Picture 1 (tube, one colour):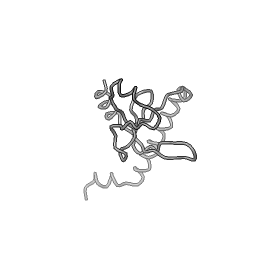
Picture 2 (picture 1 turned 90 degrees about the vertical axis):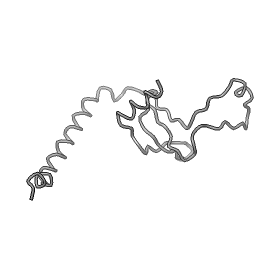
Picture 3 (picture 1 turned 90 degrees about the horizontal axis):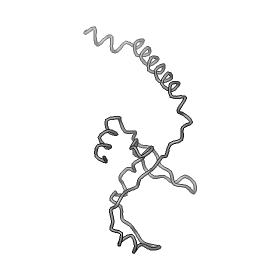
Picture 4 (picture 1 turned 60 degrees about the vertical axis):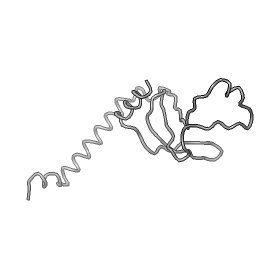
Length: 117
């Protein structure tokens, strides 16, 4: 049997790796403690539409403005106008909410920002 395969499947090394990961996460959280009380704006976007001013002026009670997103597509979640996640709309009691279904990777955020800017 290959020694590399034995080393990768060694339970004690897996436990040590998990402990190291937990320690790193704890140190990262401690390092961010000074920003934990900083308020940020969270925005959930259900869709967009570009319309002419004349069309806006015709809107009234009961008007429907169709958006560019299908009803089954995930909602975009932004923090301070930066995309960070996607989710789905939920109703919690008498309020709307969003269930986070996907957190974007750093590379996905960069790609989406390049498309916006």
